[in-house]
Length: 378
Image (cartoon, rainbow, N blue to C red):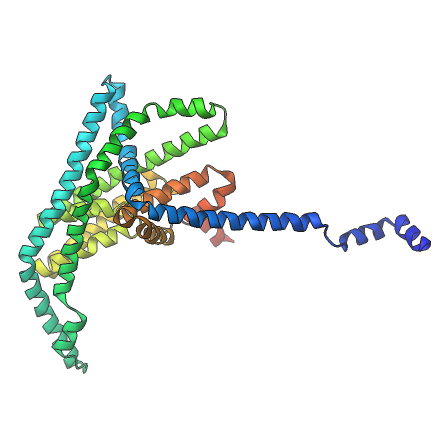
C-alpha cells in the first residue's frame, strides 16, 4: 500500500493517467443536469407564451397590426416634425392617410368580390368548356372519366364560392379598423418620447438600451423599404393588368402589394390567380404576357433591388417563411399570416443583436453567397 502510494506520487505520468481515467466529479453532472432542466423550463415557458398569444388573439392581433402601421408611419411623422409641424397635427395627418389607404384597400376587395359574382357565370361557362375538352382528350387517350365523376372531384362553382367567401371574410377585418387606428394614434404620439424613456430607464451606456434602439431602427428600416418595394410592385402589376385588359386589375395590384411582403413565394401566389383569370377571359396569349410581366417585375424588384436595398442580412429562408406563415396563421389567423414575415424578420434582427442567439439568426436566414463559393472551392 505504501509502495504503491510512493510509486504514484513519484511518477508524474502516473498522476496524469490516474486523473484522466478518474470518474468526473459530481459537480459536472450537476451542471449538465442544471442546463438540461433550464432547457426544459425554457421550452415549457415557450409553450405557455404561444398558448397565451393564441388565447389573446382578439386583443394582441389588432395591437400587432397597429404596431406594424406605426413603424411604417414613423418616418413621415419624423419628417413633418423636423419641419415644425406640431405633434397633434402631424399625428392627425398620418392617421388620416392610413385610414384612407385602409378604406381604399377594403373598397377594392369588396368591389372585386361584387364584380366576380357578376361575371362568375361567364367564367363558369368557359371553365366547363375547357373541362369538356379535357375529358374528350382523356377519353381519346384511353382514360374513361365520366362528366359526373369529374364534377364530383372538380367543381368550379365551389372554387368561385370559396374565392368570393374569402374576399368577404377579408373585408370583415374592417370591423377592427377603428380599434387599430386608435392604437396607431397613441403609438405615434408615444413614439416621440420613447427614446427619452429608454435613456432614462436603461441609460446611454447600458447594452440593453443600445441594442433595443438598434433593433427598433433595423425593423423600421426593413418595414419602410419593404413597403416601398411592395408598393412599386403593386402599382406596376395593376398598370400591366389594366393595359392587357384583365378583369380586376386593381385587385391584382393590391394582391401583389400585400403578398410581396412574403419573400420567395409571395410573387408566385399573387401571379397564379391573375394569370388564370387572364387565361379564361382573354386566352393563352394575354395570359402568357401577364405571366412574363410578373416574372420581369419579380426579377428586377424581387431578385435584384430587394436584396440590395433591404439587405441580405434581413432576408429569411423559404422554409422559415412557410413555417412562419403556418405558425402565425394558426396563432392570429389572417392578421397573423399578413404579419408573419415582418414578425419573424424582427425576431431575426433581435437574435442578430444578441451574441448568444446569433447562431439561430443564421439558421433563419438564407445561405450566404460567400460561404457557398468558399464551399465550392473546397
